[in-house]
Length: 71
Image (tube, rainbow, N blue to C red; front, side, top):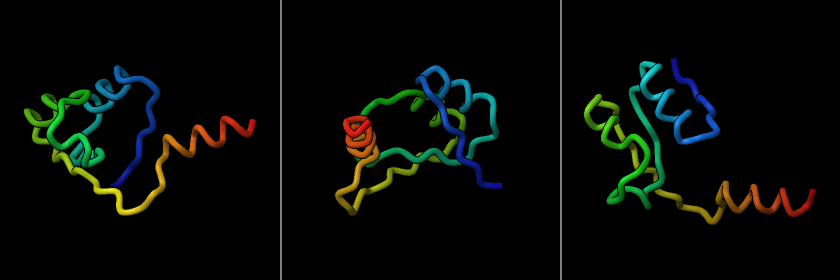
């Protein structure tokens, strides 16, 4: 079953990765050669890291900022 699990903090993310039977974690391709939260855990736990390439101009961060500025 595929599921998206939202989280708020980096600690929440680590707890989720350790609590659920995660098979794939998707992160932006800008992190491919960088360290990020729980990367070592994913690699040692055989969680597949998929580095998603953004082929469009949309950004969730930019969208959040736009919405916040309108409220």
